Image (cartoon, rainbow, N blue to C red; front, side, top):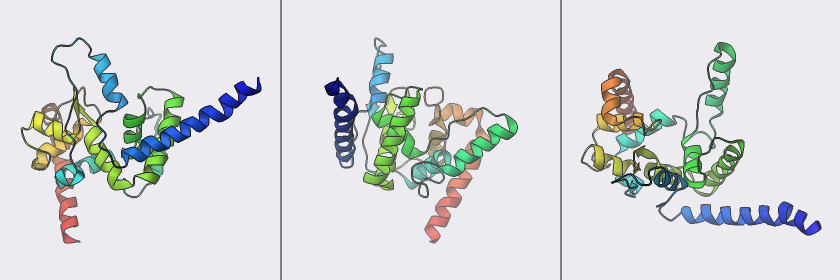
Length: 228
């Protein structure tokens, strides 16, 4: 009985801790070529002719600043100021729910999305959220913001079989992520919340005002950056 308790309470948690730390530490330097989400998609589309996961790893310096800015404005405006969890957005979401009865919406930060994509299978369970939170803390501590953003730019699902902004830019716009135009960068950023249901072209056609507004915000942000 004691051995069973030791296994459950000591050795399994200790093994998880060691493996998780080694895994995160390795990804601090190595390109993330595989994620559980990629495996999940491969299994979902098994047997579908022509399906394959496409990812082209690039350094963050090889991604256009307008692409990066569009993603930050669309996905996580307080990325550089929070510690992995956006307390302001969480509080706002709760207030909207309590006051207006709005459905609790997702408000995951880029750090949380990286943790989910790289270290979990994305199931909708309390255990997955706990594991995601654990890895979010780890990558914030061991990677830092620039590495988290670089990994996100390369592993975020950007379309059916597409992972990362470089693969998406080459597929949709026939250009590299370094040379993408601002309107295209904005349209791609708007795809990220629902990459299997949207494309940059459908976003532009259905929500032209959203794309125009975000494009203006990106250009203003870039102008402010250049003046500093």
